Image 1 (tube, rainbow, N blue to C red):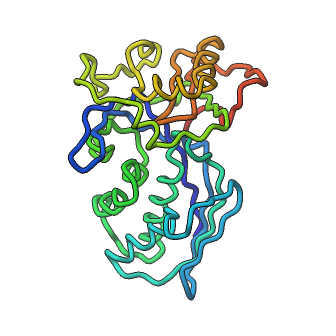
Image 2 (spheres, rainbow, N blue to C red; image 1 turned 90 degrees about the vertical axis):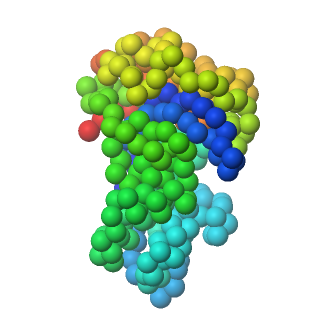
Length: 268
């Protein structure tokens, strides 16, 4: 079985409070980017096995999210061992959820491959054991997210008529480092679930709480955001805890060679 885990962006990200379990409650909008993919191949094997091409994954096997996904599912519903091959294209530490997408797609692929007939709710609960944003990738539709990022409500935003540019300066931003640089604050006046469907109204209103501290440490990321606006973006922001910056444009643009684009195009 072959499937294609895709990236996501965060439209706004607010740190609401630190929880007693050490995680943070957040508010954000997850939006799928179906044009930027990894490639995942799964087949039954005599023993659990993982291989990788593309971007190198240097995590030890016990921390590999694809392998952990098999273990989480096997603990819930015993399944045979599998061989997993991942061609990695979505960059790491980029705020695009690539590792979470890979793990979630392993769960959904195995559910189909072994005809387990697990519900969406069960798959999302299993995905949450792997990462706070993993449950989003089970259904991969735009959602307003609260809690750790796993409490979803409908979101009417559609970016299909816009030209999207994702740029990444080849900087890895640690999620732990990003959280260490922010402090929870009171809920703002403008809530993300009241977000206008018009991106031209977001600038100066919809913010990512991680930007201030990440920009201070990595000025190149802030420069990318400023470049997006210089090029005519109606809205630009860092995605998640960084380091990718996305720009939303009303029409296709010529992109200068000094912008490290990792994907551009119109969304499906």
